[in-house]
Image (cartoon, rainbow, N blue to C red; front, top):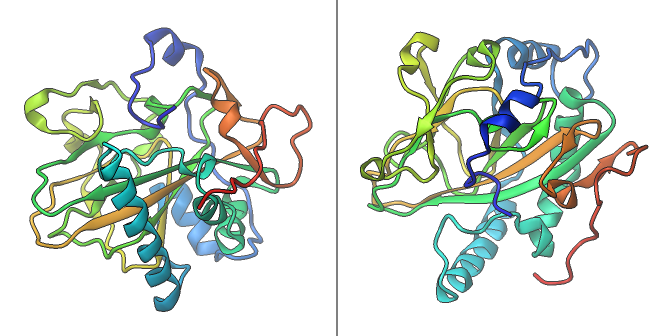
Amino acid sequence: MSEKFDILPDVADKNRDLQFRPVDNPNPNTLSSGQVIQYNQQGFIAPLRIFDQAQIIDIRNYFDNLLERTVAAGGNSYSISSAHLEYGRVYDLLTHERIVSVVKDLLGENVVGWGSHFFCKMPGDGKAVAWHQDASYWPLSPSGSLTVWLAVDAADRENGCMQFLSGSHHDGHLTWRPSRPEEHNVLNQTVDNVEQYGEPVDNLLRAGEVSLHSDLLLHGSGTNHSNRRRCGLTLRYAPVEVRASQGWNTKGVVLSGTDPDNHWANPSRPTQD
């Protein structure tokens, strides 16, 4: 079950509640009040330091080995998806205390972590990520998920850092078209004419830093023009009251608070690393 590669049927879009709900948290524990206001107004927060140099080197070494094994098995640098269901080290990142504490300031006490996907642009691979909203790909309702994007490698303009359209999450669910093969899009949806929604903001991150963005924020990234890799791990979170269809509730790990309806499967940590 990949996180972003299946186009949902139109009927699913029509039945889902896709609107941004501002965070009401005047006393956050980890973020500042200004950062919460920024998330409400702009739809993202960046950068935040989570891991120091030694820690991110260890994470990078782990990913290097995982990528090598994945490619040897016939995969590629974009195919390590829902990794927390298979790899204990990725589960540990999804459930990491410092990350969860930030997420709770935006989503509340009852939080589920349900996604983990490596997006690794190799030098010269020619791949881009077209402008899109995450909510278009996910059979979740109501909207309210957010992504923590962990820079395994430094992300800059030259190697294809992510870009945000600040404030575009207030425009609701936007019309998209299927991407064309000649666009070399990592995903399969494209939102056109995005200039009407604002100016792009580069998400420049050092290794070990993260950004957070709303599932309704328009974002994308260009190709890697450098001789350096650009790898990021996307970690997905939602309030436990969000409902998942198409079996996606099996991915969700309850990280904080309770899940009164036992909607999310809450899988245990995998033993494989």
